Length: 103
Image 1: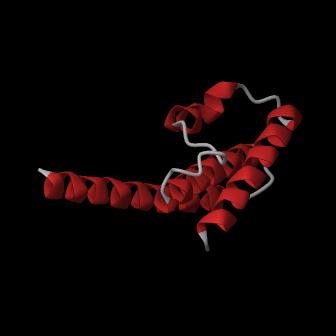
Image 2: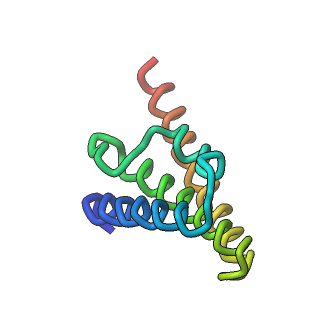
């Protein structure tokens, strides 16, 4: 996907988050990890990889809430979480590589 498409998907997930928060009376603690990233769809200066990671993280949180309410299998949220962690590690690896190159 292109970065602009990822940003649109990210925004769609934000809308879904708002809907799920209302429907299932979620508190903000469930989305705390996502909120602490401070990466939102309007942050177009963020890298494509960062948006991909936030999409996987937000998707896994949403999937967990849905699986807790019996709407989808737990394996879906687990798979999204694992995929997100792989992307997070890749981002960290690239940052270390850039940092080492600059020093």
